[in-house]
Image 1 (cartoon, rainbow, N blue to C red):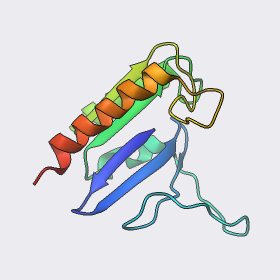
Image 2: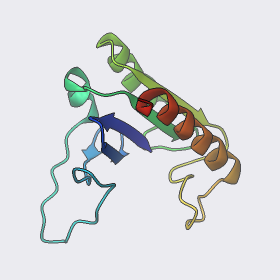
Image 3: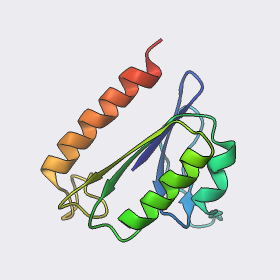
Length: 128
């Protein structure tokens, strides 16, 4: 899960991997489900690093393969090279979709700590 904030009222949860970024967000809302007839363009997430204009929070599972811990390290290096504000957290004993309470991959401890990270992030970057 990656949370990016840009502007006063815009939040974009995004599904990510090191090789692709699927943007399913709409302005002023969280995410939406796209109809099958709508083409979705995928771009490497690294391509967005130079133009990133908002703080970025990434919550990852250590057992996830997409992105893997090695891939998240590489993404962090690119973001740091571009002097971007970001924070990544990798949770042990958690894989892909560890945050999804309706899936068998849900991990209570990681999700709880993840929500604490999200709330701290909001306090730091959304407080006006």
